[in-house]
Length: 195
Image (cartoon, rainbow, N blue to C red):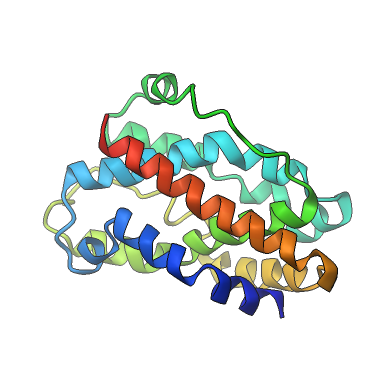
């Protein structure tokens, strides 16, 4: 199954990204506002740069099966930026140089989407931890983390079903897409730390 291949091929990158995205702090309820802003900015820039290109590379049949229009997360991230008093336009200006986006074919796009959809899977747990964190008492709706609401598991299962239908000769491209996405997010996270 492609899902398992992707998990195994990206386990190191997954662990490295969790560290950059303060997962231990989130789970330990010690995440502070500055760290949250870094996570939010990283996610926003990632989706700003890649979301549309990935979704447009998915063929019409699979896009319909995935209900692709309901998988856009950029608007939810923009709402979260407002909650955190961060101007979206000022962020995008600082990242205008990050335009070395690869050309996505469908297999590469599905691999990259595996990373983005996987990030959404932890959303319910993250919201719970942030709501228990004394640093986040009021004013945060966490739109991005709660974007799928009750459809979280059905959406993931639906995505995995489409992903696993990819022909085996396309698996290396999907793995490359996932590795590319992990590395791209890590680069963005590193740059966000320094702004």
